[in-house]
Length: 446
Image (cartoon, rainbow, N blue to C red; front, side, top):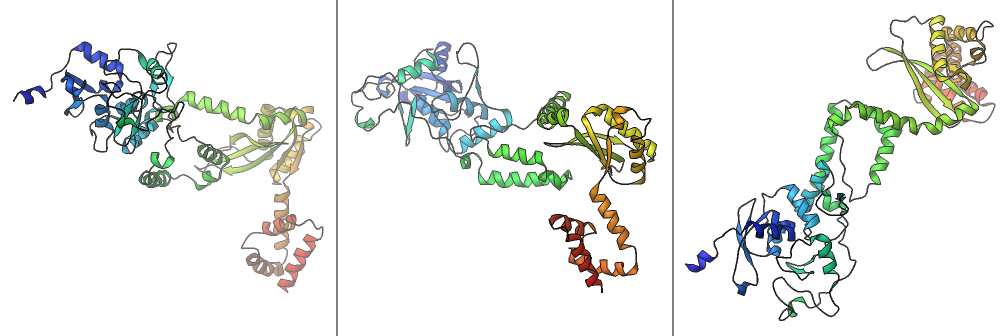
């Protein structure tokens, strides 16, 4: 009966609790009870604040309560993360996976309690615990301190761990070196040794990867994302950056409020402008060519895209809405003048469009003698591909024999339009490529 009463948990004083918390962060999540007999070498009664289990032991036993495979199932992710990075006991297996998943959602852990000039220090996951090293199920204390080590802090613990005299073995908690040498044979401290960095398979398990693929495809199909976005340069740049991500850096996705924030949009626009600086630099020196083409937006509205092409690439300049406007030469010329004025007429060498009648008239009006000199010097260029396509269309409709020829030619060129012939002729450097193409078409139609 007295033995049973001796094992009953009796909570220690507040000063003892505070001293234990200062010695190791594990005691933030374990209530400290009465100290047991000297025969048990400084062990105390302990109680978990999460599950309420009671046991007798020291901080190694408290760490084993959270780190073992069948450890406390009620412990929070935040508590696991703090114990992993500050207690000196590294977590593995399912506990380490929970810690990394928590970091992905809430960001990396920051130690706000360290005294390093008053600034919080962010942990580095590759740093190994310096107070203890695990050997199977036993843990050897490297600092040689008891349970009540005071409020020396982490810095003092590190110095104590690496300042032991040579020839002395590490001491277990609550005792001296006598009678302990057999238990620690072969245990030597390697200065500067770091823990093995967790592999990617330990962080992202196969089950997580399979579920991630399912959720990603469901998100893409449910929101009807166009497949072309996965061939865009921005997506390729994003995936390339994601492949270069270090394993220790967690991925924190922007929240909904952050994505929809006006500040985020302005920041992204500023970054895009900075990225286009290399393309825009030659515009001031050698000028640019403005290219225009009419299209329809995704909601079916007529729009006109204006692109600026220079020596280092092409960039989108402006998009105009043509809804409710006439598509005659006067309206086209007005849109051109507006775009040229915003871009700077002195930086434009030519403007290139297709050879529609409205564009031809607008190009002639741009070269009119009464036009302002800064606009008059800009040359209008018809699109070569559009001209060739119209030429082949006119040739193909010149007589009934050509209709029969196109029925034979189209399957030969993979069912493409007349532009298929143009592309094949343009790919050939020979000046007789056009002659051979039409000669072959004539022979096939005969």
